[in-house]
Length: 187
Ligand SMILES: [Zn+2]
Image 1 (cartoon, rainbow, N blue to C red):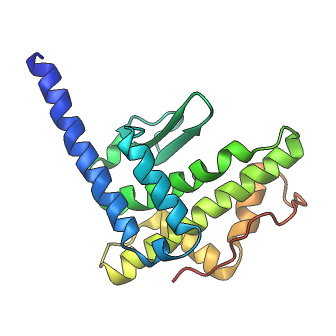
Image 2: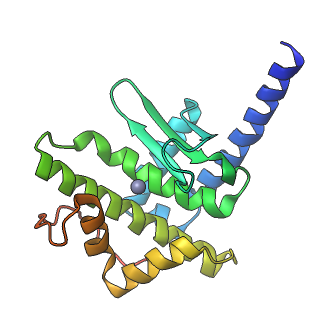
């Protein structure tokens, strides 16, 4: 192992430790006590143990906080490397991407249905993310996060689902069946 490799190994260890800390924080939150929290925590622990979660450059746009790939050949969650070491963003992002990871394999091949599922998937990811965010903010003294404040406000006002469905399907009124079991308020 040369010096550069040793350094890479070392920074990977630091990243892994940060991701472990973020997952354990989620596991300690009220979110982890009730469905779908336990599933998501299990998935994150399982994937992390297999080195499938890492900080990485964004794939599509630089504002993106995380990505999730979950196909038969490839399983990976990334957190934008800009947030390396930043638990305030890492924790909600892992909840968001972990939610996607529990759903994505269920997509339909019918395009309309697939868009509805994608909208529902994104809605659920945002609901879970703001649930944990609210706990971090109110119980853990974490500073406000502008983007998550906006999502939380929409959720509390009951407009989040319609906004997300319209964004993902490209239609103001996409007539998607209500397919998500989650209508819980964050607490
Ligand atoms: Zn998402």
